[in-house]
Image 1 (cartoon, rainbow, N blue to C red):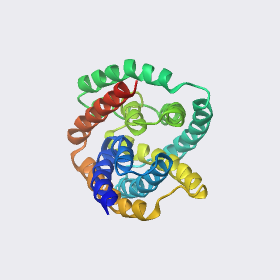
Image 2 (image 1 turned 60 degrees about the vertical axis):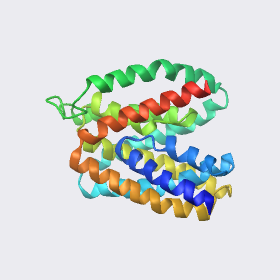
Image 3 (image 1 turned 180 degrees about the horizontal axis):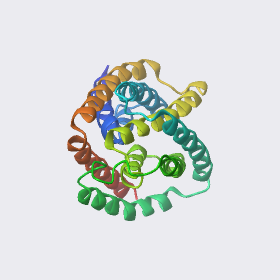
Image 4 (image 1 turned 45 degrees about the horizontal axis):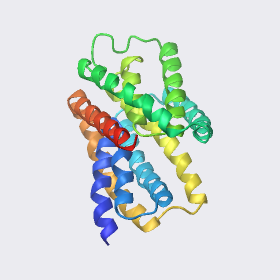
Length: 249
């Protein structure tokens, strides 16, 4: 029972964080490994609980009208293409190279978030045309999908920042779009792991219940409190990612 007591509470926290600002995998994947689950099984089982939880937060954003469906689906397709390309590149590219790049980029991103107190809620919000926004969202999904395939941590956070910053989307719609993109990549990866027989079903299904609770709670806070809750969580995720890379570099 020890793995359940270690994993489930941390997966709840990961789901809560992930539904708000992305980056929940920075918490949940180490939780599985801390519980003694072998690496490949941990990655696969983490995808199960993450995908199930993301379904809930995506559904909640969709129910509240915060998911631009056409935009989100087009971006999701590009993310899948980018992820597939990234997975192939990862076999050729040393992980240390990307980690070194991120060590330089992350402080800049954190500085941007500190200065950008509005998080997609100012006079410029919604000023992009539908065509411009579609190009930005699809381009961002392709590039971040590429990153996700190569390395991965913080994918949702980066998408959220691009959609609210460059795309000038309001925070709730950007969060909803990010969830659809994340869900598509999670499901694609999960199917692969299931076919490979890598999922630890008992632990994964138990953790999924806690992931659902975390995603439901977090997505509800975003729809009610918006930037008040998202901005500090984004900064926390960026700091955790920076420390994680620094320790592994």
